Each structure stands twice: as C-alpha cells, then as structure tokens.
Amino acid sequence: MRFSEACAELGLSADASHAEAKKAWRKRVSQWHPDRNPSPDAHARMQRINWAWERFCEGGPGEAGDSEPDTGPATGSGSVHEPAAAHPQAAQATAPSTPPQVLRRKVKIGLEDTALGCIRPLRGQWRAMCTACAGEGHLTWPGACSACAGSGQVKRRTWFGWSSETTACEDCAGSGAAQPACTTCDGSGKLSPESYDLSVRLPAGMRDGDVLSVPLPHTRGAAAAELQLRIELQPHALFKVGDDDGLLHAHVPVDIFSWLTERDIRIPTPDGPAPLTLRRESRTHRLPGQGIPAERRGPRGDLVIHIQPQFPKRLSAEQTALLQRLIATCAEGPGDGPVRAWERAFEGWAQGKSQAAPNAD
Image (cartoon, rainbow, N blue to C red):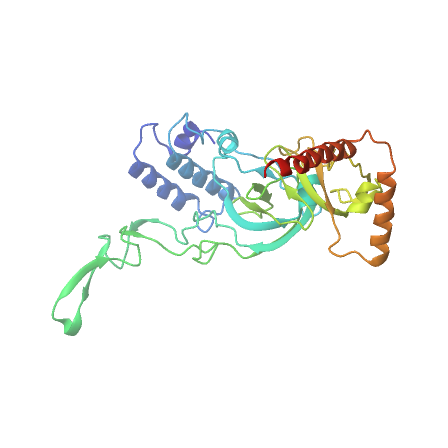
C-alpha cells in the first residue's frame, strides 16, 4: 500500500498531522471492527485500515516503505522454503507496507552444510498479532470513557484520605476515549498459538552470523510473520575456513616414511574421503572446487591440504638397523649430490684448519 493509498483509506490529505491520522484511524476502527460491523468485508477492511495507519506512521511518499506489499501465496509445511537474506538494502527495495511480525531463532550448521547447502526442518509455535486491534488489545470507540468522564485523568486519595492526587485513567490509558477490550483476541493483542512445521533450504556459502528470513503461513485475522534465522557455524574437527576467498584448509599429519616413499593416503573433503598421492617435493596440495563458496550460491573455492611429516620420537632396534643400511646405500651412491658436495667442502675446510693450528704456536 502506497502512502497516497493510505491517506485515501483514512480520508486524509497528504499533509495531515499524526494526531489527525490517529483520530481518523480510531473512527474507522469503530466503524469497521467485526464485533460491530456484520459485513463479510469487515475483516478485510480492518486489515486495510491497520495497514494504512502503519503506512502513514512510516513516513511520506518516496521513503523506503513506499512499495507494494508482497501478496504471494503462503506455502504449507509440505514444501521447501527458500529463505531470503536479511540485508538492509534488499529490505528497502521490497519492504511490505505492513512490517511482518518477526520471530528470531538460531540455526546451528556444520561446515559441510555451508559448503554444499542443506535442507533443515524447523518446528515451533508462535502467537500472531491480532489485526483487529493492531495488537493493542483494546479498541477506541467514539464517546467518553465512563471512568474519567472523558478527561483522561482521575483523582485518587492518598493515605488516610487526607489529600488526593491526579493520575492517568487506567481504563482508557489517559486518552479519555472508551477502550473496550478486543473480543477477537480477548484483550491480549495476540491470537491463539499456532504451530509451524517447515523445511527450509539453507543455501551454500553461509557464514557465521548470517541472517536469513523465511515467511510463516498465517490464518485469517493474523498479521504476517516471518522467521529470522541467525546462522551459527560450528567448529570442525578437520577443516578450518580461510578468509572470504572460499578457501578451506585441512592439516594432515603423516609419518615421514610415508611421505618419503610417496605413498597414497586418504584425506577429508566436504564431499567425503578422497585419495591423495604424497609428493616429496611438495607439502601443500590444492584441490580446485573442493572448498566453500566465496559468496552465497556462488562457485566453490579450493581445498588446501597441508601435509605435516612426522618424525618418530623413538626408533626401535629394527628401525635403527634399517636406517643404518639406508644411510650406507646413500654413501655408496654417486658423488654429485648436494650432500656429497657439502661433505667435500667441509673436509677441505677442516683440513685447512688442522694445518693452520701448529703455525699458530
């Protein structure tokens, strides 16, 4: 509902004051409330009156709220709901004329969920705001409040009746107008509890602290409502999330002998275990497309595997003997390697030091 339509519904001009709008709203509520108006259109007209009042309170034309309401059908519990991100700019572009009632809850997800997306069942109860009284719990009828004779104030005696003080009338909340309790909600401002049972599709690429919005189905006479889901990304035993580039990191310790012999090992990925062949010349392996999306619903980043060769703290007698044999085979090899070159340089240096020692005397 646009601002101009809200003014027309309340019978106001565009430059009407807040007090004039409130007076016009009360007048139309007293006329169209279903408890007093038997017309089959009373409920719908009451909703439009309340929407118009809220739209007027939001501000004049050209502001963020000056957009058409979302009139799409509410989905039942058997369908999968696609949540929308609660982003300020997106809210300004699609804000309905009547702000929905917001229910907030947290949703814990694992790292595999943010890599691949998931469908999460959500169940709970909520109490919708009564549209007949706009959640006030009472109505304002034409005429003066009987408790205060329309003044909005009453005198109450203090201790022993020696003096009196003037306070706001509780029956009309100081307005001076009659305010009978709303029979639709029994004066509570909210309707009877309703249950929701939804299956919500959470998109890939979610981060800790993200907020997603899901509309709730509601019955006639209830204000629109939505679930605001705050994502809580749980720590993972094997993966760590990098910066906002979508990289996923996993540190894999392997024994030094497996790394030296370039054996095949199994590594974790968000899709499940996968094989990897070790390479002596590299301790970092990058797997394209095995990370998480850098942005929601975007392509997945890479998975970086960090190999950490582990030396045994103690060697058995058999291991020591095998290593001695291995060292001997290395010593018998060609003398062109870096170790042999360093040994020759060291021996030359040591011999020079030993020959220079007597001359020092």
